[in-house]
Amino acid sequence: MLTFLAGIMIGKAMDKKQKKALKRAQKKKKLKKEAQETQAKVGRKMEMFNKLPENCSICGSSFPKTKEAHMSWQVKVWSERQEVTLVCPPCLAEK
Ligand SMILES: [Zn+2]
Image 1 (cartoon, rainbow, N blue to C red):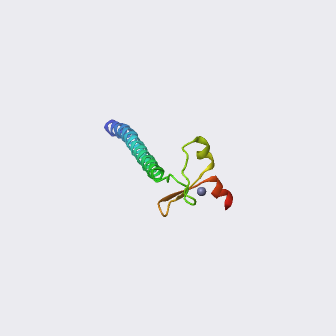
Image 2: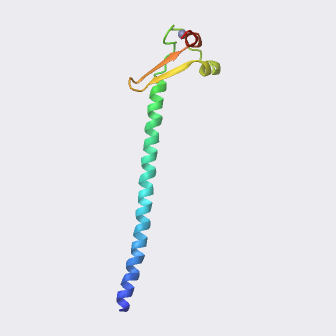
Image 3: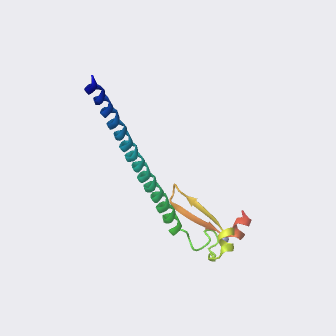
């Protein structure tokens, strides 16, 4: 009877330990997956950013690398075409 109880105790203890280890492994796996997903997202964004044209896609005027230009020029990301187009404020106004 005592052995039996001890067995249950040990069994429970091991179960708890195993559960803890399993939980830790799952958490690690989840974190790793999240990190991979984030990296993939950033990678895709960087890819898009590298595709950013240097000229307006409509009139061809060059894009000044200023804060104002970044705020006023419109960047369109065509994810299905994997394309990025840039439109200057005058062209935006013409639309
Ligand atoms: Zn333009």
